[in-house]
Amino acid sequence: MSAIDVDKNWQLLINGEWVDPAAGTYDVIDPATTKVVGRAPEASVQQADDAAAAAKAASVAWKNTSPAERCAAIGRLADEVAKRSADWVPTVQAETGALKKITETLQVGGPAVDRFRYYSNPIDLDESLAPVPVAKGPLGPAGLMSARVKHQPVGVVACITPYNFPVTNVAGKIAPALAAGCTTVIKPAPQDPLGIFLLGEAIDAAGFPPGVVNIVNGAGPEVPAALVDTRNVDMISFTGSTGVGAKIMENGGKTMKRLLMELGGKGAAIVAEDADIGVAAQAIATVWGFHSGQICTAPTRVIAHKDIYDQLVETLKTFAGFMPVGDPNADGTIVGPVITELHRDRVEAFIKSGTDAGATLVVGGERPELDGYYIAPTLLADCTPDMHVVQEEAFGPVIVVMPYEDDDHAVALANDSDYGLYSYVFCGDTNRAYGIGQQLESGNVGLNVIQPHMEAPFGGFKMSGVGRDRGKWGIEAYSEIQSINWIG
Image: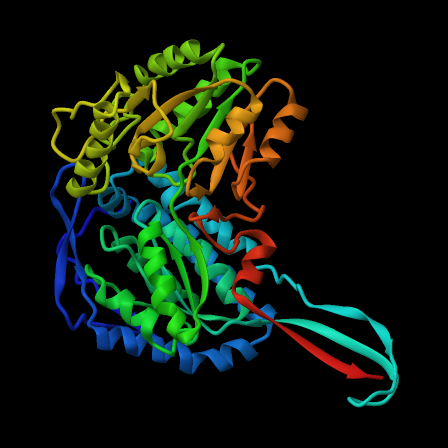
């Protein structure tokens, strides 16, 4: 495992070449220690345009490369990531603030490799429609009309990624995009971009043609704005906040950008009176402190039946006692820091808004006396649907709890949200749970389980996003559907 090289000269990847950043560098900060991890390259707007132009120039040849050859390149990339990822752990762990075990298993290891491996096998979604008879008419002769439905690559995809799981998220974007025949420009989150440049070294070693994968970076909005504005980019694949997603949709509409956006969440967890309280509480607690609550699928709105409400709140309080906050490198730590000082302040403001509005602070709420940007796991009870902390995503280790009367009331509370990414139902009667789940306005629903199916389509209803990815839907997401018709 390599040590962190704070003085490493990080460069941008444009058209197959590593180039110095035209706009200088900025410091990347370890959220656990507030020390500098490295100095990230800052691209100019011109370099962002150059990357998009390189991707556009490479797009025709890559589209016309056989699916087998494209997938073979993705397979080589999977091999390179598997070979190199252990050396990435110190840098990625320090820049994300993730626990060491999370970094090793989820940030740079398994999921990223798995996503490349999955799309290294060709997936053919094209189909022929059954011929239909057509009568002679003003548009042509009589005959049998046939059609072939083709999935053509959308073109150049700008992949704008989040800070919580940067390498894994990029893998989930570029693997299906490349397999579909698209070329890409990656724009990492500014808080922790260094792991993406390490991934870029693996991409380089895997032997992709120049311009097929490009990486540019910037601390401000100028670089991503340039990618949204340019006609050389055909599609934006974005994971991040709903506010930024709305701005991308607005500005991208000028050039009819295709969009795939996974945005904010405010997951509901309905806990019925016949649920196994221990199982439900453990599932909620697992995600409560996971990566300090910086996960969009977290069940942060707990909606508990009135008969078991007090018991569930007390059980969650007990679980909080087994979630020590501290150094992400320490073996006993469960909750590490959040990504930045600004984000810690934002999460604390959410907590205060809840208590100011009448919520009961059951546990947490304090700032641990540690260097870095830490927040103790916080549980707010006696919440009401109108509270800001109930309606908006804090993206930190904060759980709110509300009681409900019956199933219709539970569904109404769960659906009383602008968001609909991932919700959950904990219920002893599986048929009842399934019936409740179908009524939830959510792109994904877990029944008595937190773990997702990684090949099921993933995306959100309402303000939680546009489109679906994963599995075969990943190929569809980066495709345009073309119908080819003829009379035979």
